[in-house]
Image (cartoon, rainbow, N blue to C red):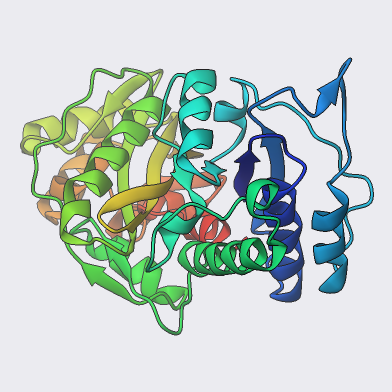
Length: 342
């Protein structure tokens, strides 16, 4: 779910108009599970003793004119914690944006609503113009553009896959997602040692490495590792290393972690980014040296994290799994689908 906070000066005109127009549109488009929308103020001018004023009557009337109600909405102040709570914090004008920066101390998630359109500008402020029609037109234009950008249209769009893994390509095709193959060729490094943070960081690096080549796209980066007792097992260096890994896994339960980063670019900038990881428990049968050597002779272990591939000949090594099978193969496609569509 993509969480959006619209922000204006007092949270009684433009930002609640944007909030309720957006809610109305996502409901009509069947996207309610995909978005969570709210609004806030950068000033306490419309908040007295902790109680915010209701939506300004002309703004409420404009919403009603379009069949949209906002009867319980009251102004509330934006806080620093909103930066962690929301994925996008969207101001109506540059003055809002400046105040937002001072509140949250960061601007990576901060945007102007009409920057998502073909004609970036401030949303007309009816407090000064008394022209609620012009404000409505601006809000409608900005919100419509935002919904279009953040809704992955499988019929019209292709996902950029920042990975050369044939298994990830197969899994995306399996759920009907077309993709543009553009693997990151950068050498990724991370200081993270916890497996879940390790794969999340590397997946983020992979996605960000290709984004300059894709200025208006959804981009997917992923990384998979095997972990035993908290120790990370990557791809084996050689056959001896593969044998070492397989002996470690023999007769034990280990974890497979895949980190996934999905980001959306617009005008060459990241406007939305979600990084997650999925863990699956995998248990191996006890393996003899003969079992291990025979499997290594197939050549399959050499390009696989943990020196085995569950979707190939390595399936015979596995006595059971608990969790997402596709995650062990290399991409938890159900989770990818949830981020893109739900």
